[in-house]
Structures are given as C-alpha cells and as structure tokens.
Image (cartoon, rainbow, N blue to C red; front, side, top):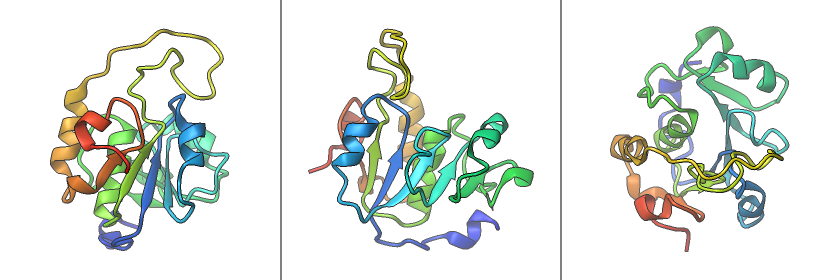
Length: 166
C-alpha cells in the first residue's frame, strides 16, 4: 500500500510514537492505553504495535516477524510505502510525521530522549555518556507537520520544542 491512501485514517485518535531511549519503559506505563502505537525501528517490538517505522533497510531483519504494519521508503520491505514522507534522515522524525499524516491527536513522544541520558537505548547495558543532538532536525519535523501543536513530549528535552503532556 501507499501511505497516501492513509491520510487522516486515524483522525483524532491518540497516538504514541515509541523511540528507544532509556525513558521508554517508564513513559509507556504512563500512557492511557487507547493510543495507536507506532514503534521506531526495533526498539518497541515487545509491545503490540500498530505500525513500525524504519529508514535503514538493515532494520527489516529485526522487525520482519512482528505483526505490525511496516512503514518504510524501501518498497520491497514495506507493507506501507512512505514515499511521500519528507526525508528527515532519521526514523523517529518520519514516525512523528506519519502520525501527523494519519491525523492523530495528540501525538505523544515516548522514549525519545535525544541521547541526553547516560545510556543510548533503554535496552543498552553499557553507559555511554550524554551525546549532543541536533535540535534543527526536530524543528524540521515540527515545521513539516500539519498540526504541530498536536505533538507532545512525555518528558525530556523535546518538551521545550513540542510542549509536554498534561
């Protein structure tokens, strides 16, 4: 299928975009439970996701057995081809744009810590120290959304850009 066919297909439905940051487990527990779940790459495969968004073709081998619909720009790997989505150069940005394209509201960002914690991913053991993220990439995502005010960060550094969950 082509993503263009799904415009506003989830109009007004709450959605959570699930990244892989260390905050993901705690933040998922704070969700109401009725949200559409969009996983970013392989990070949330333990959950009953509705969609998985990925840009790197190598991720396919990690997500191929999950029952969620796979959204990617790689036609041969996609259940839903994301060809109309802007190329943000990172899967998290594409996932937020897709949720906005679906018409979801609110769009709650969970586990998107901008690499500001002492571990890169919630499933990482090794400590890595905080890294610097390029906030301009998230500004570009926000600026491409039709309803940027629908996007909210559960916690963390993106609250400054999108606002927090009340």
